[in-house]
Image 1 (spheres, rainbow, N blue to C red):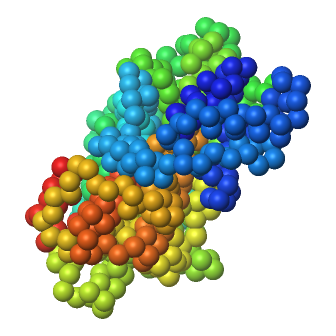
Image 2 (cartoon, rainbow, N blue to C red; image 1 turned 180 degrees about the horizontal axis):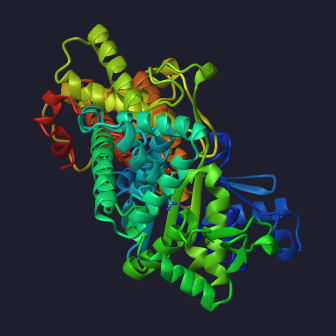
Length: 577
Ligand code: ARG
């Protein structure tokens, strides 16, 4: 309808381009001022007339042509207010939002995005910080996927570096095969801590550790087999978490993958004379750009984090020929990525501007209290299970007859954590407060999922109905219904915006807004009534709302609980005829 309005305005105002008209159009704050308002102030210069006179003349001119899309056109001051013929407006909105591919697009077709996220450090537990990159990264993946991009999901595991030399020493001195096999990462963490305690007293342990890492870099079989074992054990735990979250990666190419590719980085930098020796180490000075130097090679000739990130970039560009490479990490790595991107630029590669760091804030428990057993760090797996357990208890108490309680508790428990991590701008810190996160009435995952279940239940109660192609759109023209429908129309723009800004929170806000509008509709407009016309039209609204909620939550990585008795009917599909 907006496009038709723009066409009509362009027809009547030859002096303005369509784009100018489109950007000038306003949506009035109050519905009694129309669906759109066109301000005539800009035209004053062109016509050399007062804006209100112009508005008056244009209004007359438009009214004379009797366009059938308007129910009313009126001039107030320097504005022309347009009221769409409600029934037709409702029909057009309905047609738009009930399209199967509503919300998705093809803008990304033919383009590739590498997205580097999660990336935990081997032999260390997966904590809530890593949970956050996993959740944000996965959501960005879904958002870009829905816009038609081809994606490579990369888990850049922290699986290389001197810490593995330390672990090998620790294992050889204080570890046991049985304990590691039994306790997994926790055991590795334990002996790692022990190493640091002992190394305080005996510095030679550090030399020993460095020597083991050098052995690893030189391909020593014993060193590498212990390292590989630690890595396998860690991956079992990480994959257990990814499984629980329903998430996957295309590549587990961690830092170790680049160990034979770092010399090439050094060569490239030398060829451009960018490397400078400083206290035995090799660096790229960046003071000209107000940054600390980028360390490339340590005194003993070994590579570091940044070297491997540069190697990874050359590899990714060559292998995937990305149009964009995104990194999702905590804000504390901001400088690191700025340095790496700068070095790429200094090397003369024009694709430095395709590299994007997407940082996020900290995660903490409200009041600084940690409810987990493990001390200072909050472990992701504990939090997830705790959430599932708490939801399970709520179901037991409120709805003990629910079918497949385990599945629903998992979907809602996990959904609650994901939603909470994605509800504010990334950069804001996330605070855990169980009462808020799990509140079915708040701006939460459970609230939106509950609204979805409510839609499902309305459809279920309606029985096995087939909604006719042609519903009575007049039924939908009341303000509450129209507000819901108009809110839903925002979906494609919201998705695009979220992608442009790397901000999944725009989607979660949208989902809450639709759920709130729906609940108002549910409250004000009786659905399962005698009058078939009213019933069918409203059932269609329910079915459309249900789909958009499901699609929006899917972009956040959140599943919707499907009541068993409902799914077997496949009513959603029946309703689409
Ligand atoms: N392993 C790192 C960490 O836990 C994150 C890696 C991010 N990706 C990268 N290419 N540097 O902090």
